[in-house]
Image 1 (cartoon, each protein chain N blue to C red):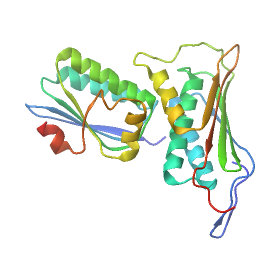
Image 2 (spheres, each protein chain N blue to C red):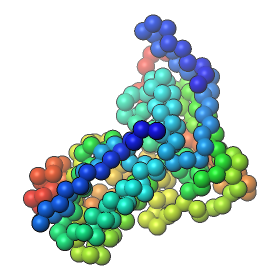
Image 3 (tube, each protein chain N blue to C red):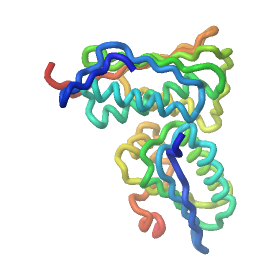
Image 4 (cartoon, rainbow over the protein chains, first blue to last red):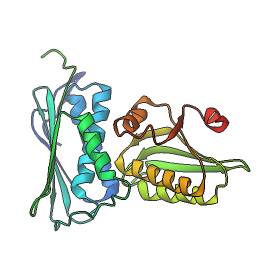
Length: 144
Length: 113
């Protein structure tokens, strides 16, 4: 993780992008959640917003991985002003749409969760690329 | 990697009870499904699923619960969820699933319904 420093009791915000690369493996997505929580917390999000971003990043990873088990998820977390942006791409895997079981509308559930929890999000599953992104504003920013 | 979720089961003549704890995500979903579907297949009365100790739930786990609900309906069994954490209830609300499930804030209330 880059761009973080703790100096005594003063916790500095993250000004550099934080990058995480994990194999597409279901039990490693929690690392994305942990990173999301850390970045959101450093960006001054309150407890509820941190929880929201954790879940939103989980859903983004699940959408981008789409049930596959090959390749790596590359995540970039960026705290910009009073928002956190996250970009998730799948590298090193052939695109095979529709792998994720969707028997009970799980994909639609993911979209509903993202719609509710973040300000903007998008997914680009065209061609050879699988990419998703989201942006969540801090609705209770502290003093600058 | 340390187990981040778990399931405990208890059965009586009248009802089946499952207590689920931890983070219900993509990694937990297959095991969760296994336990819940097996419980439905064994049950003759209501199935109570206690989610009081659940700290995280995502769309994958919600899909498992929807599948369990359908399985219960096919067998004429009532599925009753127990949850009171506002963070978890919020996920059911934003996905529009509060209408689908019977929910209670305590196990006692769920058993008495």
